[in-house]
Length: 342
Length: 175
Image 1 (cartoon, rainbow over the protein chains, first blue to last red):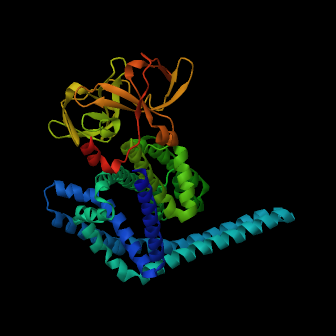
Image 2 (cartoon, chains in turn yellow, red; image 1 turned 90 degrees about the vertical axis):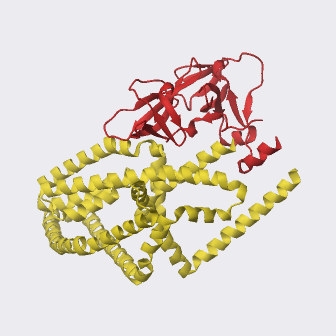
Image 3 (cartoon, rainbow over the protein chains, first blue to last red; image 1 turned 135 degrees about the vertical axis):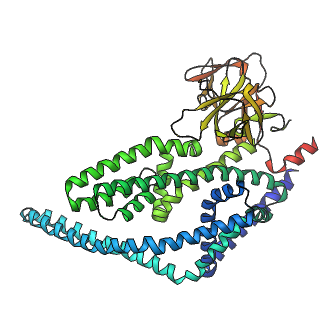
């Protein structure tokens, strides 16, 4: 009995190694990499849209109609962003030029004040280094943004297919899950189905709650910035809302640009903006977030911080956003194995 | 050897279950189990409501109409009871301060909700090698920081051994 088991074990390990190495080789091919990217993005989007789909289904609309409705809504939303939001962002970013020149003035002013200090060689050196580093960093960031936009433009035809893929992910997901389970041996499918169900439960809760929180934060920030008459409320509130997905570090990244822009108007406004945004973060972090996210990810804060640092190192901001959900998935798998193994 | 799941529950079978009133209104989801340690019974469930600014609710066992994927209840109440999570991860020790491990979960029957055993885990690798210990609830005394184990007789522990969970159905057939 034991001998057969050993043979089986070696076989399984061998087949897993071969499987993984084949996947690695395939990923190296650019076309397949693009395809995987496309499917991955569509999968995430359809996963985010799934709760809406379920609501429509429960209202008594049939599957095909519900998925087509959602896809139409999505396309409408994208068109709306192109028609309304992007021009307004452009308008705002035209003003950004002014803001940057303002910043330069500010810098020059500060320079004059600092000149007294810069007779000291060490301090002038430090200021120089900071200035150059800052310049280089901004250049790199803008380069990256430009490059990613260009990349998106290059593959725009590929990405045009993604609504179609999302449609099928929504409409036919059960069938697809069943088909993909063919990879696993039949006796294991029951347990794997249960594990997938559990992941779906926890992750679904997490995504919905994050979206709600994001929306609340964006709207609240927008209102605060409008009320304080800070420039570019739309961009800044969107930045704050998106960064808010990242726990602990996110709020800081989100608030800093808003405060900097407010600083251009006057230090007093900056102070008040910072104060209000701080209050908002406190309300969000202490009252809303525990309530909405709840126990869906009962993870220790230290684990979350470790995950965030790891994600940030591997994949930048996107890594930080994806770190917690991936961590949740791993945790659920561990817990389920722990449950079914004993 | 018997299989869990058919006539016994663990806490995971209930966590995240939606709680619905008899009229079909969603109240919230189950967050925790409520336990009477002296009687050795699960007396109900703690429910985290979907509405904002609401405190956690309790559902007692006698108010449960039915449960499968959702739980249908007659009424909820606001009293506080002892939760399972308040003593999960507590250490189990005996009179000589020998540590057995940490409380991980409970096993209870499907009809009377009587707690049959408390699963004590001693760490991931040790679990795989030696299995988890299952202790009887009437041999345990719940303290503030630890749980005291007082054996009634010189029986060996019940063990929860790792098994090939892929072949649940086959294992049943063989026995």
